[in-house]
Length: 160
Image 1 (cartoon, rainbow, N blue to C red):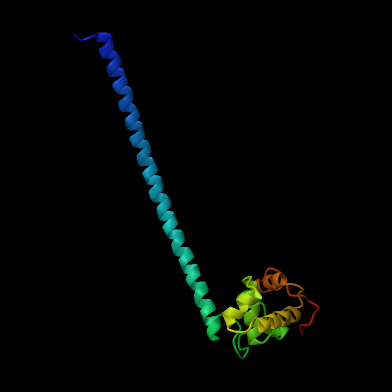
Image 2: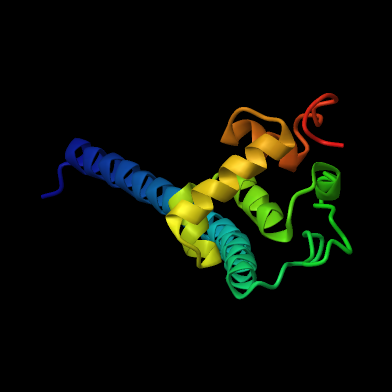
């Protein structure tokens, strides 16, 4: 025999379970859509990161080979301006010193400068000291800031 109160209770419980499952399915659908959006954004950002990494690697490879990227100081000083507008000729930097100045602007250590340019650490340290003196700055950070155009070149200094 069917107990009507019990049947009503079971139907209400089944209805609650059904609504709960429907709510969970809807929630999972929203989570799945958010996951797709995040993955899409991550893929786009990875493309930018990979592109920047490849660009940086190609610049370092060009420096290792002695070729300078467009906008960098060239060997005979035909174009001695960095993208930031610093006139390396004004400071009488050699082409190699200009390369070192660019690497200092990237935050490279003397060891990294030496490896990048294929020179000894002693030579890299010598070039760094020479760059600092010619730019009229006291630190690598200050040289990097000057090369990046974050600070103005010193008005009075060793530069002509």
